[in-house]
Amino acid sequence: MKKFLKRVLAVAALGVLVSVSASFAEEGFPLRAKFPKVKYVTTEALNRDYAQAVIVDVRSDLEYSVIHINKALHIPIAQATFVKDLEKARSKENGKPAVFYCNGHSCAKAYEAAEQAMQAGFKNVFAYDAGIHDWVKMHPEKTTLMGVTPAPKNKLISGEALAKKKISLGEFKKKAEGPKAVVVDIREPFQRKVIPPFPKLRNIPSDRLLSLLEKGEFKNNDLLIFDAVGKQVEWLQYYLEKNGYSNYSFLKDGVLSVK
Image (cartoon, rainbow, N blue to C red; front, side):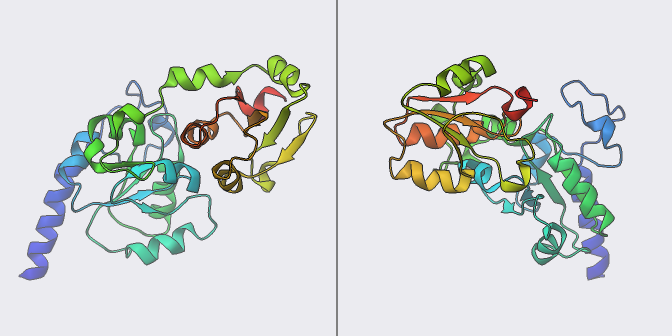
């Protein structure tokens, strides 16, 4: 009888939690068509079943350290041990829904994590494809931003503020010639297949750069930073602002602009 009740409750919970669209071309979610086997949940549905869901943040250490859903487990999909780490956190047969998220909408990591989990035999797997940006807007009380909970919405860096710090390749090259310029490549070593010919180039992965920023390194320089595709710098900006940096710029589109 107990087993029967557990199954009934699990099915009922999933019925509430899951919000699956008949059309995967729903406006605003361009990747749903690419991952037709992955079920997804809406912000409203995840909030309703927040207490029972096993929520997994599959982003990088930098992204998670800046902002994350409060109860989320941090299991980066980039790690080779992703599936093993997931199994340590939740058994494959666990009745609780496993919900993966990343930055939302055009971010594929949540879908890819859900696919890997399903292929490995995990049950009740879903993607929260609206992502952290939508979540913090609707539920700051269940979000941590730069170590603060509830997330202070007035501390969120706007898209406009980020765009102002992104400059073209031509402008980046010109600034790199300046006497106080320091160019920093924050990509991981495995990403450095293309090395741009910038002067004064230093290879400092983002995690190590954070510790240098906290010590005030480069405060007297014109700091020029680039990543792989212009996405990671969004999260680095929080640490730059927190530590009082103002003379910094990002290469728009990262190394993609160099190719």
